[in-house]
Length: 457
Image (cartoon, rainbow, N blue to C red; front, side):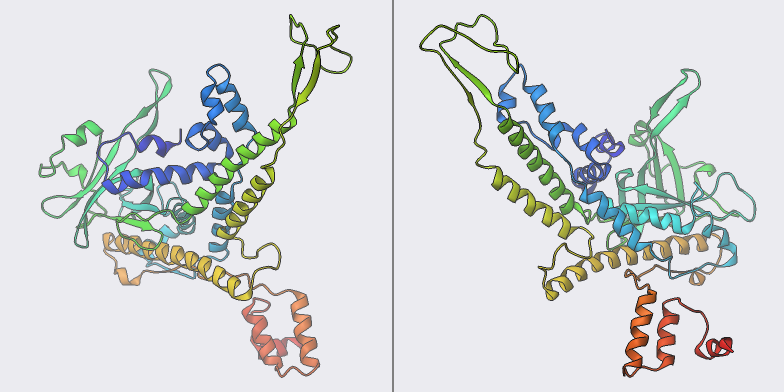
């Protein structure tokens, strides 16, 4: 089972919003994982037919064959990958950090991810789950004066509970469970660990690792040891350094995964595929009907065999399914496929049936999703970098982070240049300086018009 599928039912200490949203996260994750995971989940996504349920002897085997013949068309994963490609076609527009924080551009996370790599991971989680979070922490391996905070990414299913008073986050409970190697048993075992990040009664930030049992008995008003308070250069924080990242805001409120409707369409196609392939299979299988044959054993079938009797009443034939509903099933599947393509991130539809106004509307909706995700992740990174600057006693206003918002491919080909130049020679009122500026903006040259003229001489 997927990691977060187990997490959803493992703990009682989860926020009500978490309980409501966990099923959608599991569904989207399974769809992104693809056909193997979808089929492994069996009847969760593909119920048995009535005949299979009524057959105690062969129903299970027939269901496995029914499931095996079905195809899962993963428009969900292809759309996620396409959107990520569009979002990261260009690097962030602007990243500026003070000298004290220069190292975070190369090593922003404890795993060594750069800022841009971390942004890519955040955008992935926004698309698949509609949610993730980043926690800032003091590096335990570096207590030098040059130490800088590092960030850790928490997927939606690992953000178990939270509480916010006004604009201040009081606490957040994170799941850090995982497999751990036991040298005595010489095997890996699953260890349950929770990280509590909260403010104490004096308003200072602390972080504790607890087992679920320890958390259930934890006293929020108790005195804590010094090791519970992360410090950089002896400085503690007066706020919980955790930032939520949703699809369109950075609040604790959970939002639905943006591609959840597409995931549901993919599953609808999968179920329709199973019925269609099953009907095709059954139509191709003829059933032998015999009348008046005294058979002690099943008749031999195939070339080189025959069935004989002296009875004048004997008769034989094959019964076949007419397949009258197959055309309707094909049409229904075709409509679902078209819907999935339309809901995905294909910027051009197959065929020319779409009107210009419909195309404009469809693209504007998709670009709005891209802008929401890019702007929200940009706001989240500004927040986390501001916290890092504050922790390092640096002016937070010296931090700038502007994501890429150029989602169109504006590359210019040699043919484009040739067409434009020929149009000018035929009378298009466009100056050579304007043509040069167009080429410069499209990265054909980095020289000014005057520098380009001088370079020709």
